[in-house]
Image 1 (cartoon, rainbow, N blue to C red):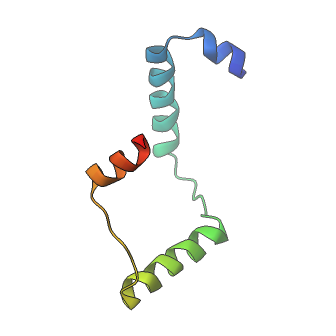
Image 2: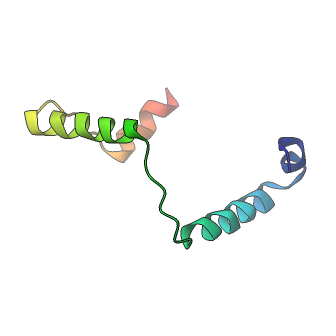
Image 3: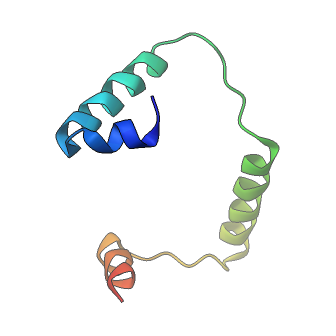
Length: 68
């Protein structure tokens, strides 16, 4: 399947297909290792929080920033 075939599907059909794909991956016992850069980002964020330099915003503030 390619992108042009996916675009022929309705949005509802594509969402249903995503749910089926997600469910098929969710219950597999294969361990997927996160890439190294994930750990680096998490460590940077932890350091920001511990140093008091992290900035937190509400979900409504985040949504507002996307609309601008």
